[in-house]
Amino acid sequence: MNGAMSAPFEFGALPALSRSGADRQENLRGDRERLLSRWPDARVVLVGHATRTPVRAVSAGSDSGGQYTLSTRKALSFGDEPPEDALFLGEWDGTDYWALPGEPEDTGKTERVRGGWGFWEEVPAADGELWVELRGHGHKLDDASAGLLTTAVALRNWHRRARFCARCGEAAARTQFGWASWCASCEREEYPRTDPAVICLVHDDVGTNGKHVLLARQPMWPRGRYSVLAGFVEAGESLEGCVEREIREEVGAEVWGIRYLGSQPWPFPRSIMLGFAARADASAPLRPADGEIEEANWYSRAEVRAALAADEIHEPGFEAEPGALLLPGNSSIAKVMLNAWAAAEA
Image 1 (tube, rainbow, N blue to C red):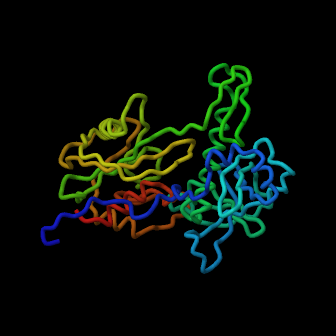
Image 2 (cartoon, rainbow, N blue to C red):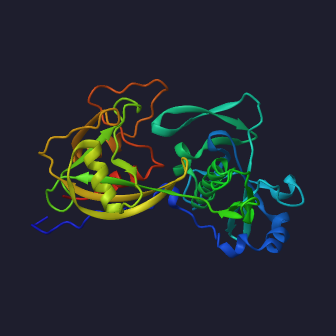
Image 3 (cartoon, one colour):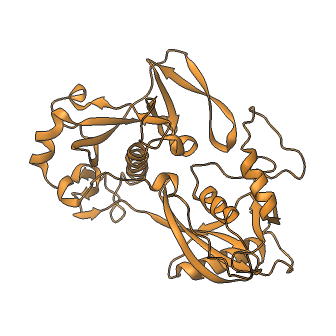
């Protein structure tokens, strides 16, 4: 590069679950008359067990940015007004979208598709639809579908955990068409909660972007699967302080040069992943946290590029060879971070 300094790496694309284009302003969900008048022309996103939802293949030549699009239902098929458990997701392209619980018909039919972690899986199939879950297939959805389903799953998960008032313990009722809950006993109103978590790509201190990246694996992951480090923000803690603490606790490394990259909602059950990059001394010993981190290693840019290029599809029960490097699924912000770092120069 003739001695020129490289630019700090940045995201080359939005994380898969950050592609939300629907208008969900508070005044929309608070306007009951408007929502009821538009209900006959609204569409409903069904969300079932394990966040499965029906999708159809995107038609050839579409520029929607995905392989699948949500297969929604007519709102009037659920009644003349929104049911009590209907969640308003927002307006997209002149149409209101809602979410309701729903499951596929028990036809016994399935289709084999590639799921999370690069494994093949059998998903329910009926009437030209596939029922896929957000975590493993969110990156395959077109932009509008990814945003709508992420919102639907986030609201659904919050309501499943907020059925009772946190102050007095009485049953709480949904209000604002899913965007708040109300306790009639103590008159407490609550809104959907999001738990902040940091996720940090740590590289060595060579040049601008480093030549090696620090990756670790949890004991429960498939053998060979590694990712960048992450953890929840604690009460009274800054985001940068959380990055320093989590990296130190998980692998014993001291980091500096912390900088923000971007974020992604991760509604499993209700997180927002805040992405950072940081530097560390690759010659310092690593000390994986007992019971939390099984192994941590430094990997070269060439090794990460090779793992990204392989993009293999595995059969259920697949066991990686010793020393193999398998990376996170495409719906994760971790994959976006690794793609961006691998594409950069030191």
